[in-house]
Length: 185
Image (tube, rainbow, N blue to C red; front, side, top):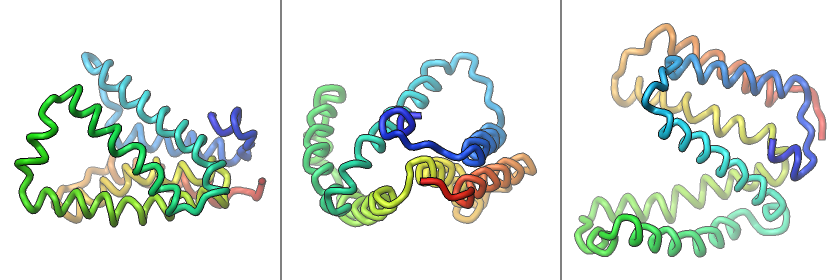
């Protein structure tokens, strides 16, 4: 929606239907949860998703002018200190976390910050630079529930239900409709 209004990207009708189908799959995958007493949490998830989507729309023009890895580096340079500052304000125990972190905690933070994040977002911004948002974002946003489901099955040994298989299948159908739709843009 943001890309349509801010970047004038017009998805095909097939892509719009694919997005709707994928969201139905996510709804099935999550078990059609009852939100009684969970309105604030659900609202924060929706708001967070909207802010992330808006951020990707704002980054897209930059990704055409700045190397994707340089873009990740600049974003990290400005966001990292800001997030540490906000953590200190809201949590108040940030310095103690730095002092008491063990080797494994530092290794994980270094891996996430200096290896995984630059590679994944560098690749993501490269793909974003060359494709319309309506084709790229559903792969990422709809791929998260699927990879979570696969990780739960393969890594945690969870037993999937028919509902989970069905929801995952519906998501895949929606994403395939988006990605392999008729060429436009």
